[in-house]
Length: 68
Image 1 (cartoon, one colour):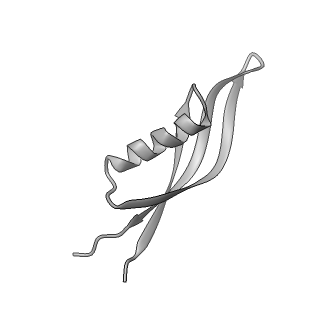
Image 2: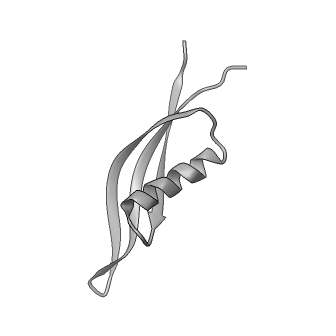
C-alpha cells in the first residue's frame, strides 16, 4: 500500500499565477521524487502603484513516500 505525503509551497512570478504554480512545482521536483499531483489552494498578488507587481500561488504537492 502506497503512502502519499503532501507539502505546501508558495511560488511567485511577475508574469502570472500559472507561472508561479509552475515555479513551485519545478522547485519541489529538485528535492522530491515521485510527485503525483498538485492542488492549487489559492492566489494572491502584490500591488504597487495600482498594478500587480507579482503573483503568488499557494499549492499542495502530493508525492508517493518511499519505503526503505
